[in-house]
Amino acid sequence: MPTTKNWVAGSRPRTLWTAIAPVAVGTAAASAQGAAAIVPALLALGVALAMQIAVNFANDYSDGVKGTDLNRVGPDRLVATGKATPTQVKRAAYGSFAVAALLGIALIVTSGLWWLAPIGLVAIIAAWTYTGSSRPYGYSGWGEISVFVFFGPVAVLGTEVTQADAISWTGALGSIGVGLYAVSLLMVNNIRDLETDAVTGKRTLAVQLGDLNARRLFAITVMLPTVITVIIAFSHPWALIATVVALPSLLLAIAMRVTAVVSRMPLVFLGISVVGLVYGILLAVGIAL
Image (cartoon, rainbow, N blue to C red; front, side, top):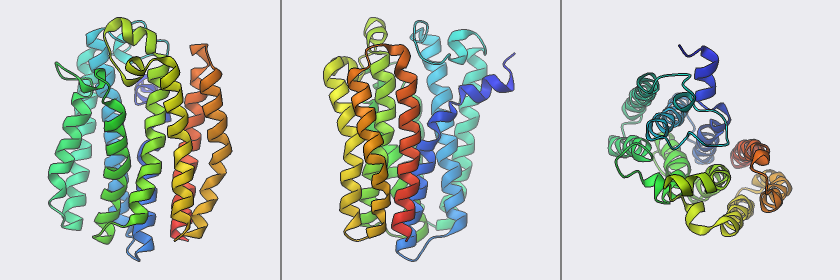
């Protein structure tokens, strides 16, 4: 029987900033339009957190039953280690998706934007089929694009439009920066697991690019958000406070380039988690000011 500690670990708390950052930036973009609202913001945050947790449990279940997690070098997974049965983890994923759906419906009712319902449905389907279908697109190199779209533009602009009933260039640009940091987080795992993924048939983007090119792409994804911030600063000067992550991002890019031992990857993963969260919060504050 899995313990509470097992379930918390299985939800992968270090990834939850990818839900917090876009909602913060989206709410700030709405505030810049004079339309920030606490209830839609909280509902959007609930949807984002529930979706991220659902994705984590869904991936744990799907990779576990396929056997692709048996030789991984990262943190233990619930199914692969036998800490929880596949059925228990699948139910946890379904339950998290249900919470996200209910909060999403509440957000749609509150905002009156019913056209968001199909987008929410697509997000749930994309989250499950990332690893959960007979032909998971996460195994074919499309994971980074999906993460960018749903944890960047969809999350940021969805948050903004439910409060301001419009999207802005500020929100659109901010969504790119937030989305790129989310992509970099996924890339840490995929670069770390490159060899074992290749053996098990997972053709992730890192596998297709090769180790060196994947690390180069990682460097681009962690450095471009600073460029985005400078562009935003032309209309929101206080956004420049988010450029404090430029040096840490550069150091992470260098660390990824020179780190040959996969056991050190958790430090890079933690670094991205901290930098991505700080970037999202500071960018949000800068836009709101």
